[in-house]
Each structure stands twice: as structure tokens, then as C-alpha cells.
Image 1 (spheres, helix red, strand yellow):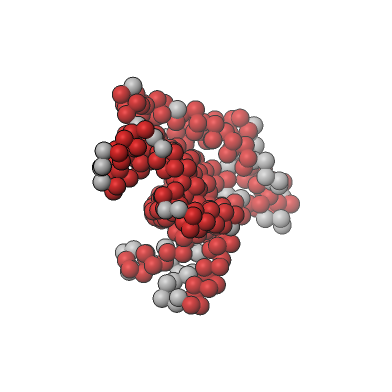
Image 2 (image 1 turned 90 degrees about the vertical axis):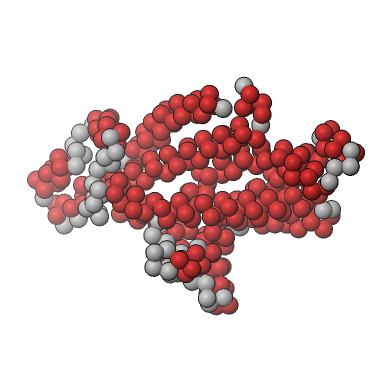
Length: 315
């Protein structure tokens, strides 16, 4: 298991390097001149001011040189200064990061509980649950999170007024209202994840039910609950763990829209603002931090996979 962890950690460096290159390149492919955007159209008519602003932010240098300098500073934890907020990028990211991590965590928990329950019941309880499971999976995959979030705001705000819709309350101010305010965003983000987990749980449980050691355990008269928990679900956890780790990238990407819809001051909403304001240093820092979170989530999934599969652990 230690070998698996070290191997995955070693893969972090080339992956993050590739992400940083793509991010830096994509930011500078956006049409328009950043110097003009910073100065404003009227002030940009002055060539001296335009040249000064380019020199100040290093925009007069070739892109490879700009990238190497930015990467060198980023490796030391210095993502530069936000062009619009005029604060250190890393400080602003760290201030918003806990909100996004909390939202993503509860969304994963929601997806695992709801998706795991639906998939298990659909595989073990016959035709009625199969129809319900198939319907939920199709709807969960087909309905976008932003559309579901909009419906929850419209109907939830009208018929369930005690759950806040467009009001974010810090956990230090009012813990109960803070958690209530996460209900609709978590449902919006977690429904699609639950559908994917339900489908994979259904297949995994159905396959595990036909394994030889499961049939032997039932033939020996072992309690059905013990058969399900120790033999069926334990085998089914392996593909579920893998798919959950792979879905983290889509989940964190979805927070950009969901946080904007529900006015949640997290990393996703900050990224949306950075894109609109063309704040290159801020956007590059956010993407790099999100990439680290995705890679670490997949690392944890791989380690959990090794825990559930003795073949990997023993190797």
C-alpha cells in the first residue's frame, strides 16, 4: 500500500505541471489585450501608459518567459497579486477554499448515501426498485445541476421558506442556518453524482451476488444481513470508490455555477468573477488549487481502493 501511495504522489508533479501549462496558455488565448482592459479604453490611448502597464505586469515579455517566472513563484506558494481585488492571490484562495471543500464534501456524502442505497435496493429488491432506480439514474444524469438548482430556488423558496435559498450564513454566526443553507446546493451538486454511483452500485452489487463465495455463504445458512454487508457490499465498494474519485473533477467544476447561483462565497464563485474580470493571476491560482484538490481526491480513492482490495495491499 505504501508503494501505491508513493507512486501516486510521484505522479502529482507531471500532472500539475501539465495543468499549469494549459491554464497559463488558455488564459493568454482569451481575445483582447489585458493591458487595455486594466487601463480602460480611454486611458489606453496613451502609448506611454500602455507600455508602463505592460512592463509593470511583465506583459512585454515572451509567453514562455512569463510562464517560467510565474511557475517559479507558484512553486514557492506565491501566486502573485490579484489584478482586480489587489490582494495576494493565495490569501484570497485560502479564505474561500473551506467553503468549497465543505460543499464538495457534503455533496459526496449525499451522492454516496442516496446513490448507494438506490443502487443496492435496485439490485436486490426486484422489479419495483429496478424501475425506480432506472428512472432516477436517467433523470439524475440528464438534468444539469444549474437547472435543478434554479428549480429548488423557485419552488423551495415558495413552499419551504425555512430553508434559505440565496442567503449564505457563516457557520460561526449561526451553525443551524448555515447547514440549512447548504441543503439545496448539496442536492443540486449531489444528485448527478448519486445517479452515477447508483448505476455503478447496481452493476457491482448484481455482479457480487453471483460470486461463488456469496452463494456458499448463503448455502451455509449465514445471516442475510451479514452476507450483504461482509460479502456483497464489500466487493461492490471497489468500483464505487474508483468512480467517486473520478467524479471529483466534475463535482468541483460544478461548484463554479452552483456557488454563483446560490450566492455562496466559495472558490467557484471567485473563479467565475476572475473569468469575467480577466484576472489572470487569480484564475491561474484557482485552477492550480482545484487541480491539486482533484489529484489528492483521486489519491485518496486509490488508497481506499487498496484498503478494500487485498490483492493491491499485499502486492
